Length: 512
Image (cartoon, rainbow, N blue to C red; front, side, top):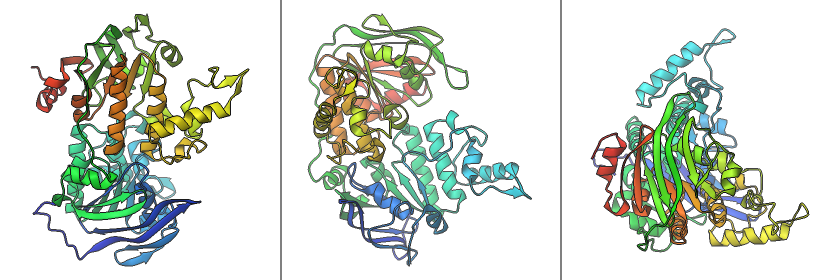
């Protein structure tokens, strides 16, 4: 906690006492306590499935506690729907945004509270109001852009503005940096400090320990649904926070034996393509990934890495160029064609491209392979084989809760949804694994597991293309790093020689 801030610890804006939440026999929160002061950034830290989001969903009125009490500004409240939470001055930015994709930024922010002229909507005033509030808090947005056309970072700003527009004094941010670039994360932390300087209070759910150290004043730790401790962040190191969270010592180093890469698996030459606006975003991109190596792609979001991955995986057509896997041209072919020719991928958006949320975990585990003989006979799915296969992956990849095979994948926490995708894609055992932000929304213990399995693929002689906004992750996992800027590779170096300053220079368009 910075000295200049001087929190008034006598002004408690949120108090949750002995909160217990049960779903049937499952206890998601078990007598959890939380106290947040005015002007404070208070982090909630815990493993995937520890009950952090469940606790905050009760504060936001999405669930009623099974037992326990909630006080806002010293007064006990019953928050049985989000409207009551909003009226109590609480706003929430969910991990998976609640935005209407075809609507504009302005329409989303004012939705349900639109200014009117008589009976008609007054969108000119709405636009003016959005502009004023965005300038006041330094949250730059394009008020006329459609949500479906803007970056994840911009969508997050829209969600924050939506809450502020509704008068939020207490802002809950659920995994707010999960898919942001390092620059966007720094900007968000500045925005959070600006909001608390203005008297707002922020509850920050995150797994990222360095962000807790950079942003939070206090931190409440939850493990397996139980309250563990509340600590002053400046008093503990990242390692101490990690140990409290998972109940054991956590290793941050990635163990990776030296090995010589083999033949070229992925060969991209002079790739050109356009973005959603029809503007050229890939401008002659060329790279190669070999057997037994991890190639990391570092770059600021919006420089063509998303479009590149979509071209490789068959989700987007390129205008020209070549993408070969093991010498076979897969460019502008279907996603199925790429899969059958050796491509598996952990997508950037787990809910849009990774899972069918209404399908069970077991169904999602065999999504690409359900026609195989081991899972189907004469066109009839063999449920026992599918369930046995799923149970093994749930155990191996530490998916929680353990009895989730029959549960819709949409009911799992974000981090556990990610584990389901990683379990499926790694077990597909293809020659090329594309991993896009693979540890997004995972806690440090789970990140350890994921890094282990990615390195295991490389050690088995697979080619791994790693696209991540986490520079630490790129530097610790990659054998080689290519930096993407303005639709082309702007520089390349070995992973062991890389440093943040050099990568940052290349990511900004500079030259070595």
